[in-house]
Structure formats: structure tokens, C-alpha cells
Amino acid sequence: MHPDWTALGQVAAVSIGATVAVAVVFALGVLGLARLEGARALRGGTFALGLTQAALCFLACGAVVAYGIYLIVPQFH
Image (cartoon, rainbow, N blue to C red; front, side, top):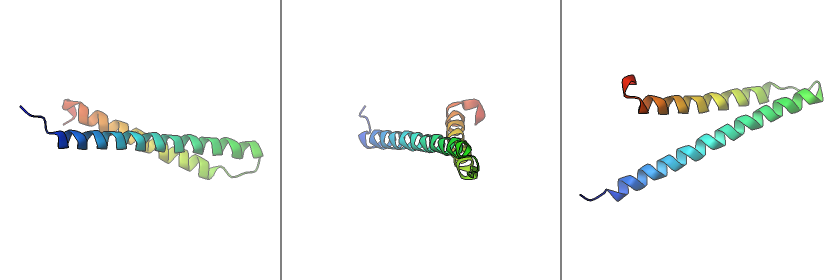
């Protein structure tokens, strides 16, 4: 039995890429929350952009986690 090293490398590359992408999107969500708090501290600053950015980023992270759980649990198929 010989392992398929090309397939293993592809799986590793996609896993690392997805992990980095989710971490970056989560960090952008935290940045949106920081903008929200900064706008509230200025009193009068608009905070819609920060709130929208945070909500979309955290929703995207939640969707990726839910999709991963869907792929792992066989009862969902």
C-alpha cells in the first residue's frame, strides 16, 4: 500500500488555507467591533459600518463552522 502524496499535499494545503482564511475573517470581525466602540466613544460618529462589518464577518465564520460540522456528522447527510 502506497500513500497518494499528491492528494495528501492537496488536503493539507486546502486545510491550511481555510484555517488562515477563517482566522483573517474573524480578525476583521473583531476590527469591526473595535470600530463600533470607537464610534460610540466619539459621540456622534456613525457606527453602521463597524456593526455591519462585524456582523458579516462573524456570520461567515459561523457558516464555515456549521458547514464543517455538517461534513463531519454522518446523520446530516
